[in-house]
Length: 210
Length: 270
Image (cartoon, rainbow over all chains, first blue to last red; front, top):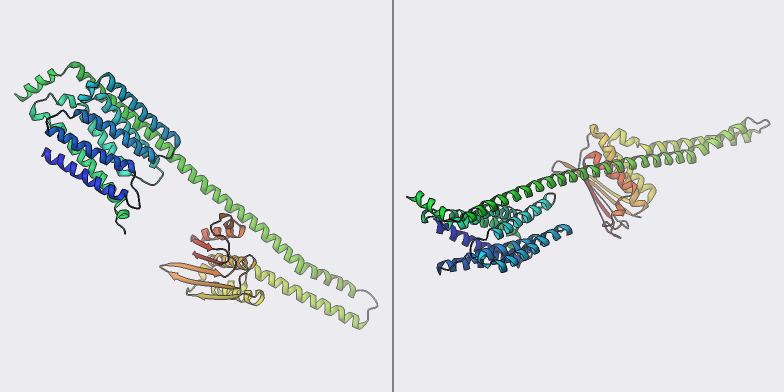
């Protein structure tokens, strides 16, 4: 059951990656940063899976993944925003975040080998705030990347708590240890499905018209 | 057994770690909650702002229309006053002069006859002119026989006096009970034809009415010099505003297409 959830999540991610890449090279262009995010997510998921099978600690990659996720989604939303002050806001959150992560990495590199609570909280919060900002801008305008934003906010709110208690679950007994990760895999699957839906709504027609 | 092991394992987690987890989770939710509240606050503000802008726009439009109506009214008064002055008052003046001459003593018979002829001529002309003015204000044919006959007569008038060829085609059976609405249509066409002639220097005009999916539609075209349709300034003249407000009375739509040297094509529904 857990494997099914995890691998169907990967599958949908791969499908999304292919579909969005196709649309990226067609007339109606998909935002490049979002495609980059999908590529990044796919590579990270695959490497995590690989390290897991090789019995290495892949938590370092988890931390890299959430930081990269924040940066790429930040750039993605930054490119959608048209108001100067908001662009500045997004950029400053990104740069402050990256500086803090670097400082933390040099002071306490050990933190990056487990679930880094601070990084998780900060990255997820930033993504939620970027999403809300985009929602705010969309209020009176045409909907762009509407479902993606819903998916991002939904996934961030759900998975953050699961990541935050990650260190706790490491010490649980085998029977219940993976429960939260099954839940996370389910959230990831839903997340990717909504992104797929966005593609169907926004890009399906435009990419395969001619 | 399981619960015991869980219990044991949790105890293995350092207390500091547990506190940190709890702290971060609550911090996360607090900040998300604050972000959501800020989001709702600004969203409400933005929506209300947008509504206000919309209402303001409508008000401004209505004000502009009102202004246009007043200006047109004044123009119309000026025109009527001028017509009365030029065509009737001046003639009646001469009539009154001539009648004074009649009362002068020692007039020969031929002189009296000449003056009387003059008076009769002038009064006839004044009568003619007053009929024309009244006719211009509201064509009697339109009032008696409806829009179709009114437009036919309008076309005839334009053809006879103003050297322009008109092509009029009608597929709609106009009802008499809608005469108030038809007057607007008539006025719109009058305005368009006057414009075609005065500004467009057109030599041919096409007018057609047809009934399409429950909507009455009128097509109007000419072969005049046209104007730059993409330039909004060209659509803000008094005549155009007048047409616009009549269309909004009719709850119809209007579409004006024109290119320089390519005439004008107007399509409106009513």
